[in-house]
Image (cartoon, rainbow, N blue to C red; front, side):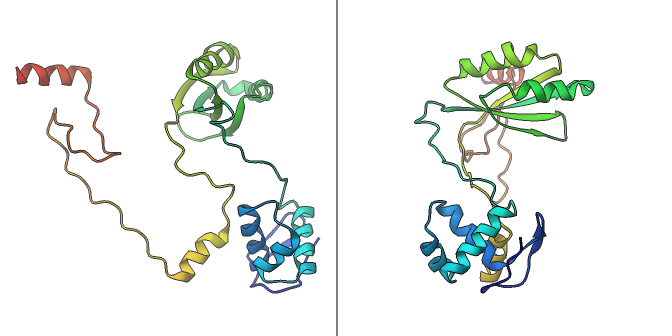
Length: 219
């Protein structure tokens, strides 16, 4: 389905079965990102088009698969799933089909992606506590023949999470002339055994042997 009516800028890309996205489509997606339950009238007012145009474009986005579904976003902490972990998996290369099939049977897996680098896949899980994560890794993943090795990383704080990003996000900032924020000045490397005064995110971890040597020198 194609829709070219209403206001909006030039096309930014062709997707799906032929819907050509323009600036008005992107504005609709921006509004829906903030409130997926907004009424058609409110959507039209915020985008600056007629109600009929807003409805036509919205239905075109759904029919073409740009808008795939609507869902609720929950507070995982209040839902009892306050522990988030990333599990990096090394897969036996001849057993990918089995790995995918077994993973699909694990409802606690929130996300899985095939990756480049040292590992083959990354799994994100949400659990009630660390013990549940440990049990999943050692009792479930480890018993899948397709899994060769795992490495688990716990997330301490989810700093930023967006429902989705759009090409118009960066284009809008460039149009406003938003300058890039300069990065922090590099901090000098502290003396061995001195960890005080380091800013957050610049912490230095000292190996056990190195730490014992520093203690002996100090005494």
